[in-house]
Length: 253
Image (tube, rainbow, N blue to C red; front, side, top):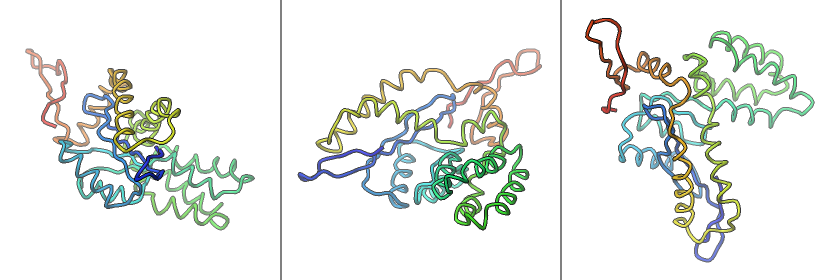
C-alpha cells in the first residue's frame, strides 16, 4: 500500500508492505509490517531476516506477486520453501501487453493453462498458447515461460489447496479493509504515525480471524504427508489401537 509521509518538511511517497501468513492452526496472521521507499533483494533480505529473528522458523509455501528480489530473499533465509507466484498478478501484467481486441481470445486460451488439471496438461496448453500468440505477443509468452516453475507450484496440490496458494487475494483483501481506515488521511507526519494507525486497524481486523480456513483439517493432513517433520502433528491413537481418535498440531514448529 502506498502513502504520503512527511520527511524533513517534504512529502515523500512510501510503500507499506504487509506479510500475511496462515499458521499451523489454519488461521490468518499478520507477521510483519515494513515501510520502504524502494524495494529490492537487500530490502527483502532484511524483511526475511527480521521474521526469522522474531521466531518464524519455517515457511512451507510462500505466495508472492513477484516483487523484485523477493524470491531470492525468501530462499536465502528459508531454502526449503516453495515459492508460488500469484497467477492473478501474472495475468494482469500479461494483459497490459495484449491489444484490447485480442484480450478475450487470449484469455480463453490462457485459462486452459492455469486451470489445467495437471502440470503436464498445463505445459501442453502453454505450448499451444505460444504457437497461436507467440509471434504477436512474444514478451507475454516469454514471461510465462521464464516464470513457469514458480507459477506452476500449485499443480502439486488438490483443488482445495490450490485455491489458497495460487493467488495473493488474501493479503489484498486485508489491504482493502485497511484502506477504509486510512483513505481519509492526507500525509502522515512520520513513519511511526502511519504504522500506529495501520497497527490499530489490524488488531481490530484480526479479532474476526477466529476460525481456521475452510476444510483446514483436510488441508493440514495433506501438508503433513508432503512436508513431514517440517509440520509435525500429534496423532493420538485410541485405546483399542484402531484409527487415530484425533489430530492435534504440535507446538514444536
